[in-house]
Every structure is written in C-alpha cells, then in structure tokens.
Length: 372
Ligand code: HEM
Image (cartoon, rainbow, N blue to C red):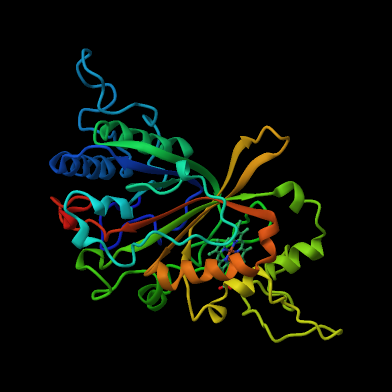
C-alpha cells in the first residue's frame, strides 16, 4: 500500500499522479573512474528499489548492523510508509563529455539556449545527474535523496538541490487542479496519464528519435522561477486574469465558465478587444501558438525563507517532461520570454536539462545500464 512500482517500461515519477512534495537534486560526477561510477549506479538502483517500497536503503538497515559500523540507512524514515515515493534519474549534457560517452549523447540533449530576461545562477543550474524524489511525505523524499548522496560519496557530490511543496500540476484526470503561488489553477491543459496517444507523440522518446538507449525515456527541463509576489499582490484581479488569460476562481479561459473548455482566441468583448490577450500566458504557451508543442508539466511551489530585503524568496520550481526539448520547451519558452506579460512578475534563476532513460525492466538491470 502507498507504494508506486519501481520497475516498468517507463520510469515512475513522470505520469505518476503528482505527489505533494518534491526533493530534487543535481549531482556533479567527481570520480574519473568509469567502474566506480557504474558501481554507484548499481548501488543506487538497488537502494531506490528498496526505498520506494518503504524499506531501508541498505539490506542490513538503520539499526540492525554491528555497533562498530555506520548503518547502511540513515534512519529518519523508519516507521514511515513509502508515501508514494518515486525516484526518477536523468543524465545531463556534461556527463557525455567524459567516460567515453560522447557518441551516446542524444542530439536533443544540447545545453539550453539563453533566453531573453534569464538571470540564471550557475551554482544552482545544470549538473551531470539529477534525481527527482516525489512523495506525499517530505521526510520520505528527503530521506531518499540523503541516502543516495551518502551512497554516492566519492563518486558524485551534490551540486544543488531544491525542496518543493504543493504540486502545481495535475498529471491525471483523477486529480483536481492545484494552484500555484499566484493563486491560479495550474495544470488544466497539461498532458495527462490517460492520453496514451498524446503521450506517445509528445512525452516518450520513440525508437528512431535518437540513440536507442533513450527510447521510452523523456527529457526533463527544470527552471527555478522566482515570483515577485509582493508586486503581483498589488495588481488588480482583472490585471492578474488578463496576464494569465484565465479566471482566477474557476480556472476557465476568459470568455467561458468551464475550466476545461478550449480557450477561444477569436472571442472579443463589447469594445471589440480580444478577451484573451495576445500577451497572455495561456495564449503564448498554447500549442496553436507553438507549432503544436506540448509537454507534461510537473512543477512544485517553493518558499526558501526570505531574501533579506523584506520579501519572501518564493516561486515555482518548474519541471517539464517532453519527447524533444527542441520542439517543446525551447520554442514555448522563447515565445514566453519575448512577450509574456507575466515576465514583470517572474525571474528565472536556475535552469537544467537532463535525459531520463526508460524504466528498469530486468532484475539485474540498473540506472544507465544502456550507456555503459
Ligand atoms: C499554462 C502558470 C511558467 C508552459 C499555465 C496556466 C497557468 C500557468 C496558471 C493555466 C492552466 C493550465 O493549463 O495549466 C505559470 C506560472 C509560471 C509558468 C505562474 C511561472 C512562474 C511556464 C513556463 C512554461 C509554461 C516556463 C514553459 C516554457 C505552460 C503551458 C501551459 C501553461 C504549455 C498550457 C497551455 C495550454 O495548452 O493551454 N501556466 N506558468 N509555463 N503553461 Fe505556465
């Protein structure tokens, strides 16, 4: 109960109904020894399979080993249920410059371009390997990342990590649409688990798209987006709805009362102006404006304390999965960066791109086996 199967054709944590909590980590690979890295990936896979089933990270466990040795689990998740924990791994572009992997680097795994208005902090961007831990209990998610970091000591070091709460997307039709820190429903027109044809077309890498090892995988883009909430909170309700292009209460597109109705970009008001402005977020992000581009958004809210200037350090940790970022995130973000009215209220402060391989299907398989 409360456990998500670890193995399967695709990695868990992508179309899995979005859990409430996130601990996302990006690692730098610090070892130059290929065998050391492979050994760690095998140990990680075994630990991930155990922890997602609600067990200790190691076979002996937090309290059953000899008193003279450090335990093979840190203990803070003892007595806690698995809480729908999923662990999803991805490999960053930089990894493929080492370990003889250059021929395996998918063309889709190019560093993202610089977008207009980016104010990225390199220290919290990029990374060689990411792990997305999602669970309904933050302690379970943190325990999992902590134990992977512990196991990886000497092979990888934590580059940056991010905690998130209050999922900002629904990834199945069974979930109600949650709200982000602007107070708007987020995830209404997301890709959903119940849409196999759309997932095949827009989410999962297909055979022939690039190197075989990525077939059944997906590309993850993360963007830490600081929200200037104090300025947002002083703008009027009408202004906020104009910026998003939807009603704040119902989430319906302007001109409609139904959250799930298709936005009508041709509708005009009594004075002849368009109900959904050309510079609104939903219009600029809509597939019709971006050659059909779609992605599965799976972000979380964050509040990292305050910024020392009397403001909350808050925002959206945006995560999107897609079959190819060159035809999904990149064109959509270009159109948002150029024209979105929302830009006055947001700052992109971190960015990363990872190739998430397909799932584990055989008992002796391990994360990244197809690479080595
Ligand atoms: C839709 C908020 C950043 C892509 C939406 C919706 C809201 C929203 C409220 C409407 C509900 C929905 O359909 O889910 C935000 C906020 C952001 C942000 C507050 C930043 C803090 C981004 C970024 C991208 C993006 C960076 C991608 C580059 C989309 C897409 C849709 C969407 C693809 C669905 C459009 C459609 O198919 O109608 N967003 N968003 N958003 N957003 Fe964002």
